[in-house]
Amino acid sequence: MEIICKRCLLSEISDEDTKKTVRELIETMPEDKKADDTTYHQRLDICKSCDELINGMCGKCGCYVELRALQKVRRCAHEDKKW
Figure 1 (tube, rainbow, N blue to C red):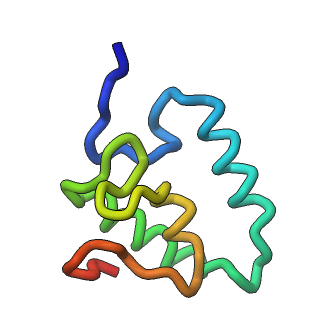
Figure 2: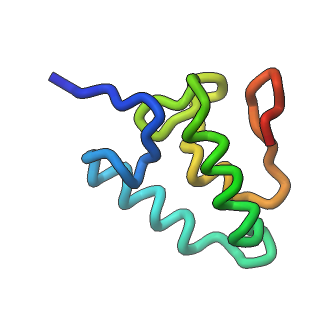
């Protein structure tokens, strides 16, 4: 039985294969495409407080929030545009 973790980031759940893939995408993203650390962590804090966050994924768009939040030009997919 899979445990659904509401308001958990991907780094906090146990799916090692998915975590590894996302971690590799984050590590190989060009620096000029990344948001600064402060912005990234602020975005993740907002995502962690959102009811749409389930198992590290956004329930609105299906993205892995840790990857989306890192991208400089991306925006929140929620209708309220939280970030």
